[in-house]
Image 1 (cartoon, one colour):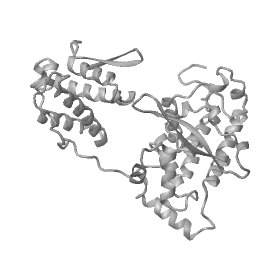
Image 2 (tube, one colour):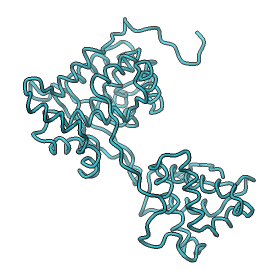
Image 3 (tube, helix red, strand yellow):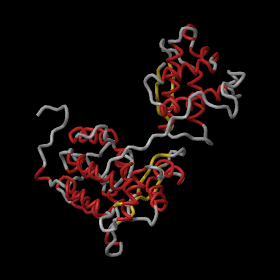
Image 4 (cartoon, helix red, strand yellow):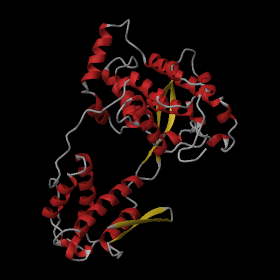
Length: 379
């Protein structure tokens, strides 16, 4: 089964086609219902993921020895729990358990809709009775993998240009998601002159991910004085200072090597390449974000682990402290570090000192940068 996406009236619409390019009406109608629902709006990325998972179900049915012999709409109308279980089992051969759990959430929503008046009760009985358990076991929660300050330094040194290096430290210093970096504007950076002398940490305005109402969730994180100093140096470089491609109020805080806006994919690829050069397997922006949480949780900013976790919650935009606690509070390294710091107050480090150390170890002025060359283009 294939998905065709079109956008009109400001909304994305989904058209599902079978292998013979015939419209598959049931999933197409279901997603039309999701898109036009004014009371329970889903974010664009959620809709895309739900569409992908239901497409995978359709593909599975098309190649099924029994269901593959009938039209896809008919197969969906006849589907029962044992077939869904076979589908989820087939995903287990090449997908991680959290991904399979997401697939069930998407498919379950579709199955529930098929047992509604809007769908003309294609399923007379619900495939998932109310309050019934799912077919996929909850994934085992794994400890988050993070990068510590020494690894961040190695990762940054693996990047050749200051425009890349500053982006890596910025993600680690502020804990922003990689998708949020391109939306942070120069005007969002705090002006240190408007704060008391000696201030080491400043609020940074962030346009977070889009919510169900298609609006960015705004929040404040913190940015350290060393990071602000690095940003000031970067903004005074010739390439940034004399870049007039943007209105001053719309100028991104960070640009790529060619003084163009960063994209999420480009940032991810840059971190991966820098990690490979540094010998850090599977380095990623998300591990930088986990590293931020670890750094804040073991820092001097709060008087207790709980206070620091509350700060992490606010910085990261978690909807509740339970999310933050569940993810980070039981990491042995965090507890051990706080115990060590309490017993060794002379050597306990601050977030400010860590940020300054990263800045000092990794800053590269433009005159020491190699020649810029676009990947895939001949010189």
